[in-house]
Image (spheres, helix red, strand yellow):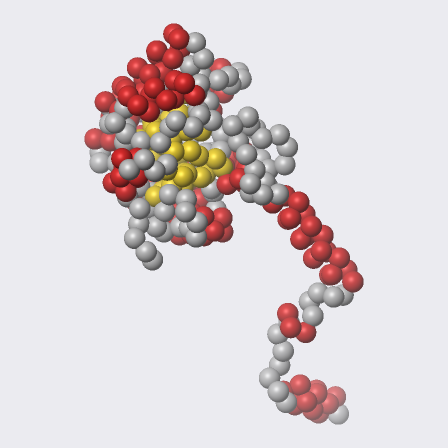
Length: 285
């Protein structure tokens, strides 16, 4: 193990003008690969409900599921700064339950920060979790857990009035104890103002380039999520085609008898096959 990245390291990056590189990933295997890159932060997002489990929203993600996959990511990437996503109904029911659930991520999964999709109604939650000694990333702008209420998502802070409200909310989140902000789907001009006006790192998820860092989900980056990407996302590889080609090559070799070959099989020790045949011959006489 190397030296684990801390919140102080991330703040230092911002102070020195270096962008924070963040990805969302959901499993041990991918996390091991991320750990070998220059990525600074991993968020284990409740988007796993969609990307891993195939649901049409983030809402079905449960605490037990999120804790389990977050712990897996920590094992795969022991030194990368780790943020866990508080799933739907893990913090909305009451302050005590919110603190308990946040604590589960710290104690059971080794996370260093929890993310809370927050409106003004969650200011007390942010404060309570922070006061309990845990770092909080407040997620504002588009909040996927509210899909049932809003029906569909649209870009946030696209008018002066909406922008004023969001800037004020960002400041209130920091005042309540947020150590970091995530802005999703927010007009780039407003995201820049927020970044300049708060004293904590601001991560952009589809909120322009002026924030202190950027986040995309690893399957999108790798080109594994077939279909139309969100406007703000980008594939840096054609992982889907590579995967399909590899699986087809495997299938063809199995069907043709090429795989497994001698080198991909286990074998008896020298002379043991002859002994086995002798023993079998004695049993038959």
